[in-house]
Structures are given as C-alpha cells and as structure tokens.
Length: 78
Length: 78
DNA sequence: GAGAATTTGTACGTATGTATG
DNA sequence: ACATACATACGTACAAATTCT
Image 1 (cartoon, rainbow over the protein chains, first blue to last red):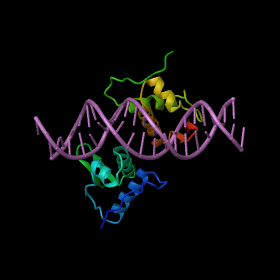
Image 2 (cartoon, chains in turn orange, brown, purple, cyan; image 1 turned 180 degrees about the vertical axis):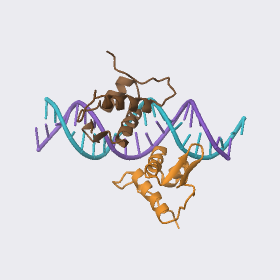
Image 3 (cartoon, rainbow over the protein chains, first blue to last red; image 1 turned 90 degrees about the vertical axis):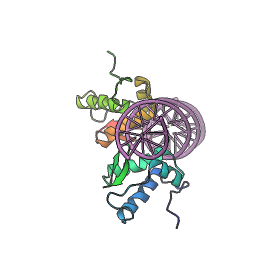
Image 4 (cartoon, protein in one colour; image 1 turned 135 degrees about the horizontal axis):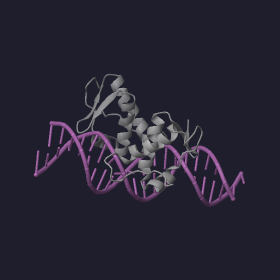
C-alpha cells in the first residue's frame, strides 16, 4: 500500500501535516523506540517538499521530546 | 552610542548571538513588558543578516516564552 | 470601506560548514 | 577520499494579518 503523504492543497502547513503523520506513526507503534526516522532527503522525495519543510516537521517532534536528532547520524524515536 | 550587533566572524551562530542580545535587553529592562521588539526588517538592517536568521533569533525567545509574536503586528515582550 | 504599506507566515532554492560512517 | 546527514545562513517569492492613509 502507498504510504501516507502530505496534501499540497490543504490549508494546513506542510510541515504541520508531516509532523502529524510522523507523530501518528510513532504513537501507533509503526515507528518504535530507537527506530530511525526517514532522512531529510527521503522525506523531501516521498512528500515532494523542500528540505526546510522536512526539517521544520522533525523539529516539532524534537520540541515534543518524541525524537532525538544527532548531527551526522539522523533522527530516532525516543 | 552605537547599538550592539552580531559578529559575522564569530563561531557562534548569528541567530544565537542575536537572541542573546535581545534576551539581555529584556533582562536588563532596556526592553520592558509590552515593549515592541524591532521588526524582522529592522533586525536585518541593523545586524546585516538575512530574514531567516532574524526569525530564528526571535523564535528562540518565543520558545523561552520571553516574547509573543502576532502576525501583522510584530513581537512584544511578555 | 478601499487601497497601500508594514509585518509575520510559509515554501522553496542554493551554498557552505561540521560530523559521522 | 567519499558519501551521508545535520547545522547555519544567504537569497527569492507569495500569502495572510494588521495597520495606516
């Protein structure tokens, strides 16, 4: 099945949409503890968004302490 | 006297420097409760930085709940 | 109320620096 | 040396909210 992606025609900001999608995957266990999140480049391609938008989405999850980002490594579920 | 500005040759990120300058002005009372912060355009000109950098600096203060930003209005000390 | 000007919000592109593998 | 990945910073454009004339 196709993975869920953001809606470019929605009024909701793309970064907010993406954060919600990733947050849901963490909440429902699709992404478990210590699991690696898709890289910024992967998120860019999969959702057709820019790097800045992908980064803002992940930043929201960091602010919520749902994930941890390590320079040069990536982002993992906490 | 000349206002304090960021150092473009410092190792410290420009946004971090600017946030520190504004944070100090709030702490020492130079900027008091309900006082308006310089607009993003003013910060750009006064410090010779881009808008994105100015926005990140103010964003830090928002994250610290030191200020409140309203679209079309600006940012004021809380 | 209309319209211009100002200010913040969102989105994208590019470049460079730093750290890891 | 190279590829990958995050960090910082420059730029552009347009949208949305507010203020001013």
